[in-house]
Image (cartoon, rainbow, N blue to C red; front, top):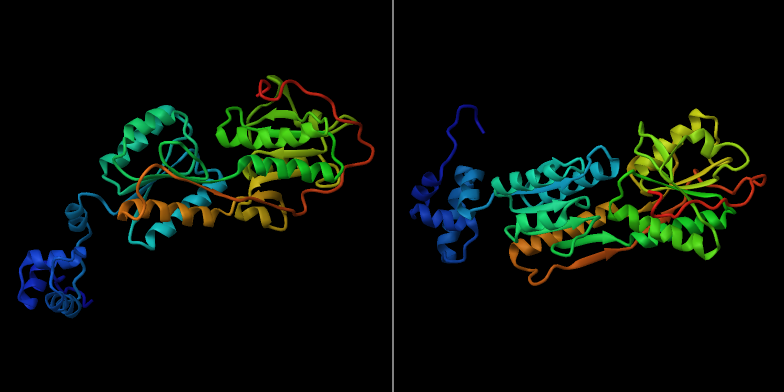
Length: 356
C-alpha cells in the first residue's frame, strides 16, 4: 500500500458495489443470505479497493474473539514450550491468534488464567498440562467455549493424548533387555496424572521380573533429591557397588538435567548409567545429548487437538467429549547401553507410590 493512502472501509466497498453496508458485512462473514450475483459484485469491489475487514469488527460481529487461549503448567519445560509453539502455528493457519498463560501448577493461577481467557472472549481453550483442580476449572468454563486437552485429559472436555502406561512399559522392557536390574525412576516432588501413569507402566513390567525400582523425587535442576521421603544425593545413588544402572526420568527435562549431573560426578553415560526420558523434545536428538526417550509425536497430537477444537467451533463435532488416543514409540539413542557386569542385584526399595 502506498504510504499515507487511506485504508478502504466497509462503506467504501458498499458504495462501489452499490449495496448496503449490511450486505457487505454478510459477504465478509460468509453468510449464505446474499445472492450469488451480488456476492460476486461485492467481492470484486473488495479486491479493487484492497479492503481488509477489521479484525475487531469481525470479533464483535461473531461475539467472540479470533483468539485461542493456551494454558500450560510450565513453559520452561521444553516439551510444553514446543507444544505451545505447535499450537500457535496450527491455529494461525486458520486465522486465529494465540494467548498464553503459564500457571506454574498453582491452584489460584489456574482459575485466574481461565477467567482471563473467558474475559477476553476467546474462541476456544487448549490445555497442555493436567490441572491441579480440574473440577473447579471445568465448572468455571461450564461449556462456554470449546475446550481440548492435548497430551493430557479430563472427562469433561475433548482430549488428544497418548498411552502413558504403554510408554512406561516400553522403557522398562528396554532397560531390562539391556541387562539392567538396578532400576530407578526420577519424578517430580508433586506428581501429575501423566507422571503417575508412566510410573505405573514402568513398575508393572519391572514387577513381572521381580524388580522393584528405586523411586527418586527431584525437581530439576536445583531441587533436593529424596528417596522414600529421606534426603539423598546423586553421588550415593549413581556410584559404588550398589549404584543404579538404569534410570527412567518422567520427562526429557529431568532426563537431560540428569545427564548433566552424571557428567559432573564422573558417571559415564551409557557405560556406567543408562538414562531414558519421555517426550522426545527437539534437543533430545542433539549429538551431545543423544537421549533415548519415548516419542509422543507432538505435532500429530497438536494437529488432532486443533482439528477437534475447530470441529466444535464449526459444528462438525457435537455431542459428548471425545478422547483420541495416539500411540507412543521408544526412540533408542546413545544414552542407553548394556548394564555394567560388576554391579550386584536389585535392591528392594520402599513402597513405590508412598515413597513419592
